[in-house]
Length: 310
Ligand SMILES: *[C@@H]1O[C@H](CO)[C@@H](O)[C@H](O)[C@H]1NC(C)=O
Ligand SMILES: *[C@@H]1O[C@H](CO)[C@@H](O)[C@H](O)[C@H]1NC(C)=O
Ligand SMILES: *[C@@H]1O[C@H](CO)[C@@H](O)[C@H](O)[C@H]1NC(C)=O
Ligand SMILES: *[C@@H]1O[C@H](CO)[C@@H](O)[C@H](O)[C@H]1NC(C)=O
Ligand SMILES: *[C@@H]1O[C@H](CO)[C@@H](O)[C@H](O)[C@H]1NC(C)=O
Image 1 (cartoon, protein in one colour):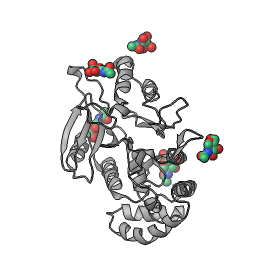
Image 2 (cartoon, rainbow, N blue to C red):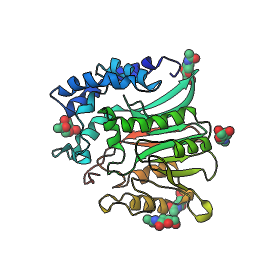
Image 3 (cartoon, helix red, strand yellow):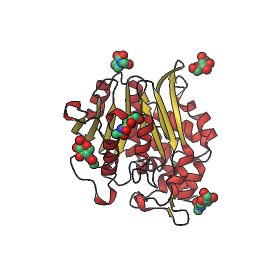
Image 4 (cartoon, rainbow, N blue to C red):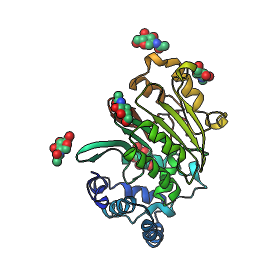
Protein backbone atom coordinates (compact mmCIF):
# COMPACT_ATOMS: atom_id res chain seq x y z
CA UNK A 1 0.00 0.00 0.00
CA UNK A 2 1.87 3.05 -1.30
CA UNK A 3 -0.35 5.27 0.84
CA UNK A 4 1.24 3.85 3.98
CA UNK A 5 4.39 5.38 5.44
CA UNK A 6 7.41 3.71 3.74
CA UNK A 7 8.51 2.11 7.01
CA UNK A 8 5.16 0.30 7.33
CA UNK A 9 4.71 -0.95 3.76
CA UNK A 10 6.63 -4.21 3.95
CA UNK A 11 5.79 -5.26 7.49
CA UNK A 12 3.05 -7.84 6.86
CA UNK A 13 5.04 -9.48 4.06
CA UNK A 14 8.31 -9.69 5.98
CA UNK A 15 6.55 -10.91 9.10
CA UNK A 16 5.12 -13.67 6.93
CA UNK A 17 8.51 -14.54 5.42
CA UNK A 18 10.69 -15.13 8.43
CA UNK A 19 12.81 -17.56 6.37
CA UNK A 20 14.87 -14.51 5.35
CA UNK A 21 16.87 -15.44 8.44
CA UNK A 22 17.77 -18.82 6.92
CA UNK A 23 19.29 -17.00 3.99
CA UNK A 24 21.41 -14.92 6.35
CA UNK A 25 22.55 -18.02 8.18
CA UNK A 26 23.38 -19.82 4.93
CA UNK A 27 26.08 -17.24 4.35
CA UNK A 28 27.63 -16.54 7.68
CA UNK A 29 26.57 -18.98 10.36
CA UNK A 30 29.02 -17.42 12.82
CA UNK A 31 26.94 -14.32 13.39
CA UNK A 32 29.93 -12.12 12.56
CA UNK A 33 28.02 -10.67 9.65
CA UNK A 34 25.32 -9.31 11.91
CA UNK A 35 27.95 -7.68 14.01
CA UNK A 36 29.60 -5.90 11.09
CA UNK A 37 26.47 -4.81 9.39
CA UNK A 38 25.03 -3.45 12.58
CA UNK A 39 27.82 -0.92 12.60
CA UNK A 40 28.04 -0.11 8.90
CA UNK A 41 24.49 -0.07 7.67
CA UNK A 42 22.57 2.48 9.64
CA UNK A 43 24.82 5.09 8.08
CA UNK A 44 24.23 3.80 4.57
CA UNK A 45 20.48 3.83 5.00
CA UNK A 46 20.63 7.50 5.87
CA UNK A 47 22.02 8.16 2.40
CA UNK A 48 19.16 6.51 0.49
CA UNK A 49 16.66 8.71 -1.31
CA UNK A 50 13.01 8.76 -0.29
CA UNK A 51 11.23 6.35 0.09
CA UNK A 52 13.91 3.64 0.09
CA UNK A 53 15.56 4.45 3.40
CA UNK A 54 12.30 4.26 5.32
CA UNK A 55 11.19 1.12 3.48
CA UNK A 56 14.45 -0.60 4.30
CA UNK A 57 14.10 0.39 7.96
CA UNK A 58 10.63 -1.13 7.92
CA UNK A 59 11.92 -4.37 6.38
CA UNK A 60 14.68 -4.57 8.97
CA UNK A 61 12.31 -3.93 11.84
CA UNK A 62 9.78 -6.55 10.70
CA UNK A 63 12.35 -9.24 9.85
CA UNK A 64 14.24 -8.89 13.10
CA UNK A 65 17.39 -8.65 10.99
CA UNK A 66 19.63 -5.64 11.02
CA UNK A 67 19.62 -3.59 7.83
CA UNK A 68 21.59 -5.26 5.05
CA UNK A 69 22.37 -8.25 7.20
CA UNK A 70 23.94 -10.22 4.38
CA UNK A 71 26.52 -7.62 3.38
CA UNK A 72 29.43 -9.45 4.83
CA UNK A 73 28.49 -12.94 3.78
CA UNK A 74 28.60 -12.58 0.05
CA UNK A 75 31.92 -12.18 -1.72
CA UNK A 76 31.49 -11.15 -5.33
CA UNK A 77 34.61 -13.06 -6.31
CA UNK A 78 32.95 -16.38 -5.53
CA UNK A 79 29.99 -15.41 -7.65
CA UNK A 80 28.13 -18.19 -9.28
CA UNK A 81 30.51 -20.87 -8.13
CA UNK A 82 29.85 -20.48 -4.46
CA UNK A 83 27.68 -22.87 -2.50
CA UNK A 84 27.00 -25.87 -4.69
CA UNK A 85 25.23 -28.56 -2.66
CA UNK A 86 26.80 -31.79 -3.97
CA UNK A 87 24.25 -34.06 -2.34
CA UNK A 88 21.24 -32.21 -3.68
CA UNK A 89 22.91 -30.97 -6.86
CA UNK A 90 21.62 -27.47 -6.28
CA UNK A 91 22.85 -23.97 -5.53
CA UNK A 92 22.31 -23.41 -1.84
CA UNK A 93 21.49 -19.76 -2.31
CA UNK A 94 19.06 -20.34 -5.17
CA UNK A 95 17.26 -22.84 -2.93
CA UNK A 96 17.17 -20.35 -0.08
CA UNK A 97 15.69 -17.67 -2.30
CA UNK A 98 12.82 -19.77 -3.65
CA UNK A 99 10.64 -19.60 -0.53
CA UNK A 100 10.98 -15.81 -0.64
CA UNK A 101 9.44 -15.42 -4.11
CA UNK A 102 6.32 -13.24 -3.95
CA UNK A 103 4.07 -11.33 -6.28
CA UNK A 104 3.46 -7.83 -4.96
CA UNK A 105 0.58 -5.59 -6.00
CA UNK A 106 1.56 -1.96 -5.39
CA UNK A 107 -1.50 0.16 -4.74
CA UNK A 108 -2.37 3.79 -4.26
CA UNK A 109 -5.87 4.78 -3.23
CA UNK A 110 -6.51 1.03 -3.32
CA UNK A 111 -5.86 0.97 -7.10
CA UNK A 112 -3.05 -1.10 -8.63
CA UNK A 113 -0.19 1.11 -9.80
CA UNK A 114 2.07 -1.79 -10.80
CA UNK A 115 2.76 -5.41 -9.94
CA UNK A 116 6.04 -7.19 -9.47
CA UNK A 117 7.60 -10.56 -8.82
CA UNK A 118 10.31 -10.15 -6.25
CA UNK A 119 11.96 -11.68 -3.21
CA UNK A 120 10.54 -10.76 0.16
CA UNK A 121 12.78 -8.08 1.59
CA UNK A 122 14.04 -6.86 -1.78
CA UNK A 123 12.56 -3.43 -2.35
CA UNK A 124 14.00 -2.82 -5.80
CA UNK A 125 12.33 -4.36 -8.84
CA UNK A 126 13.70 -6.75 -11.45
CA UNK A 127 10.37 -7.90 -12.92
CA UNK A 128 7.21 -5.86 -13.18
CA UNK A 129 4.14 -4.76 -15.05
CA UNK A 130 2.21 -1.52 -15.21
CA UNK A 131 -1.13 -2.98 -16.31
CA UNK A 132 -2.19 -1.80 -19.75
CA UNK A 133 0.90 0.38 -20.14
CA UNK A 134 4.19 -1.54 -20.08
CA UNK A 135 6.17 -4.52 -18.77
CA UNK A 136 9.77 -4.30 -17.59
CA UNK A 137 12.59 -6.62 -16.58
CA UNK A 138 16.25 -6.01 -15.84
CA UNK A 139 19.20 -8.34 -16.54
CA UNK A 140 22.77 -8.03 -15.46
CA UNK A 141 25.34 -7.23 -18.10
CA UNK A 142 28.88 -8.66 -17.95
CA UNK A 143 28.10 -11.53 -15.67
CA UNK A 144 27.42 -15.21 -15.80
CA UNK A 145 24.75 -15.24 -13.23
CA UNK A 146 21.60 -14.11 -15.00
CA UNK A 147 20.96 -11.35 -12.50
CA UNK A 148 20.53 -13.52 -9.47
CA UNK A 149 23.83 -12.44 -8.04
CA UNK A 150 22.67 -8.85 -8.10
CA UNK A 151 19.92 -9.70 -5.67
CA UNK A 152 22.41 -11.23 -3.30
CA UNK A 153 24.72 -8.28 -3.66
CA UNK A 154 21.86 -6.14 -2.56
CA UNK A 155 21.01 -8.34 0.40
CA UNK A 156 24.68 -8.36 1.27
CA UNK A 157 24.76 -4.61 1.16
CA UNK A 158 26.50 -3.97 -2.16
CA UNK A 159 24.45 -1.01 -3.17
CA UNK A 160 25.18 -0.84 -6.87
CA UNK A 161 22.65 -3.55 -7.71
CA UNK A 162 20.16 -2.00 -5.38
CA UNK A 163 20.41 1.39 -7.04
CA UNK A 164 19.89 -0.19 -10.44
CA UNK A 165 16.68 -1.81 -9.38
CA UNK A 166 15.55 1.42 -7.75
CA UNK A 167 15.43 2.88 -11.23
CA UNK A 168 13.19 0.09 -12.50
CA UNK A 169 10.99 0.46 -9.44
CA UNK A 170 10.73 4.20 -9.97
CA UNK A 171 9.96 3.73 -13.67
CA UNK A 172 7.23 1.20 -12.84
CA UNK A 173 5.76 3.55 -10.31
CA UNK A 174 5.98 6.81 -12.21
CA UNK A 175 6.38 6.40 -15.98
CA UNK A 176 3.05 6.92 -17.73
CA UNK A 177 3.86 5.35 -21.09
CA UNK A 178 6.22 3.01 -22.92
CA UNK A 179 8.02 5.96 -24.49
CA UNK A 180 8.54 7.73 -21.18
CA UNK A 181 9.80 4.50 -19.61
CA UNK A 182 12.14 3.88 -22.53
CA UNK A 183 13.64 7.36 -22.33
CA UNK A 184 14.27 7.14 -18.60
CA UNK A 185 15.80 3.67 -18.85
CA UNK A 186 18.00 4.74 -21.75
CA UNK A 187 19.16 8.05 -20.31
CA UNK A 188 19.44 7.78 -16.52
CA UNK A 189 23.04 7.44 -15.40
CA UNK A 190 23.65 4.05 -13.79
CA UNK A 191 26.23 2.64 -11.42
CA UNK A 192 26.76 -0.48 -13.53
CA UNK A 193 25.95 -1.74 -17.02
CA UNK A 194 22.59 -3.46 -17.50
CA UNK A 195 20.00 -4.70 -19.94
CA UNK A 196 16.47 -3.37 -19.67
CA UNK A 197 13.80 -5.31 -21.49
CA UNK A 198 10.69 -3.24 -22.03
CA UNK A 199 7.36 -4.09 -23.63
CA UNK A 200 4.59 -1.61 -24.45
CA UNK A 201 0.89 -1.73 -25.23
CA UNK A 202 1.11 -1.03 -28.99
CA UNK A 203 2.18 -3.30 -31.83
CA UNK A 204 5.95 -3.19 -32.25
CA UNK A 205 6.61 -1.71 -28.80
CA UNK A 206 9.22 -4.05 -27.39
CA UNK A 207 12.94 -3.52 -26.96
CA UNK A 208 16.18 -4.46 -25.31
CA UNK A 209 18.09 -1.44 -24.06
CA UNK A 210 21.79 -2.26 -23.69
CA UNK A 211 23.28 0.15 -21.22
CA UNK A 212 26.72 1.23 -20.17
CA UNK A 213 26.85 3.27 -17.01
CA UNK A 214 26.42 6.52 -18.89
CA UNK A 215 24.86 5.72 -22.22
CA UNK A 216 22.41 3.64 -24.07
CA UNK A 217 24.73 1.63 -26.34
CA UNK A 218 22.00 0.06 -28.40
CA UNK A 219 18.26 -0.36 -28.52
CA UNK A 220 17.06 -3.46 -30.34
CA UNK A 221 13.39 -3.15 -31.18
CA UNK A 222 10.81 -5.56 -32.40
CA UNK A 223 10.54 -4.97 -36.14
CA UNK A 224 7.81 -6.92 -37.86
CA UNK A 225 8.93 -5.74 -41.29
CA UNK A 226 12.27 -7.45 -40.70
CA UNK A 227 10.55 -10.56 -39.36
CA UNK A 228 11.76 -9.78 -35.84
CA UNK A 229 8.62 -10.54 -33.88
CA UNK A 230 10.42 -10.98 -30.58
CA UNK A 231 13.56 -9.85 -28.83
CA UNK A 232 15.37 -12.19 -26.49
CA UNK A 233 18.06 -11.31 -23.97
CA UNK A 234 20.12 -13.54 -21.71
CA UNK A 235 23.24 -11.83 -20.38
CA UNK A 236 25.22 -10.96 -23.48
CA UNK A 237 25.17 -8.11 -25.96
CA UNK A 238 22.87 -9.22 -28.75
CA UNK A 239 25.37 -8.27 -31.47
CA UNK A 240 28.02 -10.58 -29.95
CA UNK A 241 28.15 -14.34 -29.49
CA UNK A 242 27.26 -15.49 -25.99
CA UNK A 243 29.98 -17.04 -23.85
CA UNK A 244 30.38 -20.58 -25.15
CA UNK A 245 29.92 -22.03 -21.66
CA UNK A 246 26.66 -20.20 -21.18
CA UNK A 247 24.67 -20.18 -24.38
CA UNK A 248 21.05 -19.94 -23.36
CA UNK A 249 20.32 -17.64 -26.28
CA UNK A 250 20.52 -20.17 -29.13
CA UNK A 251 18.23 -22.73 -27.44
CA UNK A 252 15.85 -19.94 -26.45
CA UNK A 253 15.69 -18.60 -29.99
CA UNK A 254 15.35 -22.08 -31.46
CA UNK A 255 12.29 -22.63 -29.26
CA UNK A 256 10.83 -19.25 -30.13
CA UNK A 257 11.38 -19.83 -33.85
CA UNK A 258 9.74 -23.23 -33.62
CA UNK A 259 6.81 -21.84 -31.67
CA UNK A 260 6.16 -19.13 -34.30
CA UNK A 261 4.43 -15.81 -33.80
CA UNK A 262 1.00 -17.28 -34.43
CA UNK A 263 1.30 -19.73 -31.58
CA UNK A 264 2.90 -17.61 -28.92
CA UNK A 265 0.83 -17.51 -25.70
CA UNK A 266 1.66 -17.45 -22.01
CA UNK A 267 1.50 -21.21 -22.15
CA UNK A 268 3.94 -21.69 -25.03
CA UNK A 269 6.20 -19.02 -23.55
CA UNK A 270 6.24 -21.03 -20.35
CA UNK A 271 7.40 -24.02 -22.41
CA UNK A 272 10.24 -22.00 -23.90
CA UNK A 273 11.24 -20.91 -20.41
CA UNK A 274 11.09 -24.52 -19.21
CA UNK A 275 13.58 -25.75 -21.81
CA UNK A 276 17.06 -26.60 -20.54
CA UNK A 277 19.42 -24.80 -20.27
CA UNK A 278 17.07 -21.79 -20.40
CA UNK A 279 15.82 -23.47 -17.24
CA UNK A 280 18.78 -24.44 -15.08
CA UNK A 281 19.79 -24.92 -11.47
CA UNK A 282 20.03 -21.17 -10.88
CA UNK A 283 16.46 -20.53 -11.95
CA UNK A 284 14.37 -19.45 -8.98
CA UNK A 285 11.22 -18.25 -10.69
CA UNK A 286 9.50 -17.84 -14.04
CA UNK A 287 7.19 -14.88 -14.47
CA UNK A 288 4.73 -14.44 -17.31
CA UNK A 289 3.13 -11.05 -17.94
CA UNK A 290 0.36 -9.89 -20.26
CA UNK A 291 0.22 -6.12 -20.62
CA UNK A 292 -3.29 -5.99 -22.03
CA UNK A 293 -4.95 -7.89 -19.20
CA UNK A 294 -2.49 -6.68 -16.58
CA UNK A 295 -1.85 -10.30 -15.68
CA UNK A 296 1.37 -11.21 -13.92
CA UNK A 297 1.86 -14.81 -12.88
CA UNK A 298 4.92 -16.47 -11.46
CA UNK A 299 6.12 -19.97 -10.77
CA UNK A 300 8.82 -21.13 -8.41
CA UNK A 301 11.01 -23.41 -10.50
CA UNK A 302 12.88 -26.62 -10.03
CA UNK A 303 15.11 -28.08 -12.73
CA UNK A 304 14.98 -31.85 -12.47
CA UNK A 305 18.20 -33.80 -13.07
CA UNK A 306 19.92 -34.06 -15.43
CA UNK A 307 20.14 -30.29 -15.47
CA UNK A 308 22.89 -27.75 -16.15
CA UNK A 309 24.13 -25.88 -13.08
CA UNK A 310 23.66 -22.61 -15.06
C1 LIG B 1 18.55 -31.49 0.37
O1 LIG B 1 17.20 -31.65 -0.06
C2 LIG B 1 16.35 -32.21 0.92
C3 LIG B 1 15.00 -32.44 0.28
O2 LIG B 1 14.62 -31.38 -0.54
C4 LIG B 1 16.28 -31.26 2.12
O3 LIG B 1 15.45 -31.82 3.11
C5 LIG B 1 17.67 -31.07 2.66
O4 LIG B 1 17.65 -30.12 3.71
C6 LIG B 1 18.62 -30.59 1.58
N1 LIG B 1 19.95 -30.56 2.11
C7 LIG B 1 20.66 -29.45 2.18
C8 LIG B 1 22.05 -29.60 2.73
O5 LIG B 1 20.22 -28.38 1.82
C1 LIG C 1 -9.44 -2.44 -1.85
O1 LIG C 1 -9.68 -3.26 -2.99
C2 LIG C 1 -9.85 -4.63 -2.66
C3 LIG C 1 -9.87 -5.45 -3.94
O2 LIG C 1 -10.05 -4.67 -5.09
C4 LIG C 1 -11.14 -4.76 -1.86
O3 LIG C 1 -11.33 -6.13 -1.53
C5 LIG C 1 -11.00 -3.95 -0.59
O4 LIG C 1 -12.21 -3.97 0.13
C6 LIG C 1 -10.65 -2.51 -0.91
N1 LIG C 1 -10.33 -1.81 0.32
C7 LIG C 1 -10.77 -0.60 0.60
C8 LIG C 1 -10.33 -0.02 1.89
O5 LIG C 1 -11.51 0.01 -0.16
C1 LIG D 1 -1.33 2.56 -23.96
O1 LIG D 1 -0.59 3.46 -23.16
C2 LIG D 1 -0.96 4.81 -23.36
C3 LIG D 1 0.03 5.67 -22.59
O2 LIG D 1 -0.06 5.42 -21.25
C4 LIG D 1 -2.41 5.02 -22.93
O3 LIG D 1 -2.79 6.37 -23.12
C5 LIG D 1 -3.30 4.10 -23.73
O4 LIG D 1 -4.62 4.18 -23.24
C6 LIG D 1 -2.83 2.67 -23.63
N1 LIG D 1 -3.54 1.84 -24.56
C7 LIG D 1 -4.24 0.76 -24.19
C8 LIG D 1 -4.86 -0.01 -25.28
O5 LIG D 1 -4.36 0.44 -23.02
C1 LIG E 1 15.47 -17.50 -35.34
O1 LIG E 1 14.87 -16.72 -36.33
C2 LIG E 1 15.50 -15.46 -36.55
C3 LIG E 1 14.61 -14.67 -37.48
O2 LIG E 1 14.32 -15.41 -38.62
C4 LIG E 1 16.88 -15.69 -37.07
O3 LIG E 1 17.56 -14.47 -37.27
C5 LIG E 1 17.68 -16.51 -36.07
O4 LIG E 1 18.95 -16.84 -36.57
C6 LIG E 1 16.93 -17.78 -35.71
N1 LIG E 1 17.66 -18.35 -34.59
C7 LIG E 1 17.71 -19.69 -34.35
C8 LIG E 1 18.58 -20.12 -33.24
O5 LIG E 1 17.05 -20.48 -34.97
C1 LIG F 1 0.26 -23.79 -33.96
O1 LIG F 1 -0.92 -24.20 -33.30
C2 LIG F 1 -1.81 -24.90 -34.16
C3 LIG F 1 -3.09 -25.12 -33.41
O2 LIG F 1 -2.84 -25.63 -32.12
C4 LIG F 1 -1.15 -26.21 -34.59
O3 LIG F 1 -2.01 -26.92 -35.47
C5 LIG F 1 0.13 -25.88 -35.32
O4 LIG F 1 0.83 -27.05 -35.64
C6 LIG F 1 1.02 -25.00 -34.46
N1 LIG F 1 2.16 -24.57 -35.25
C7 LIG F 1 3.40 -24.74 -34.85
C8 LIG F 1 4.45 -24.25 -35.78
O5 LIG F 1 3.70 -25.29 -33.80
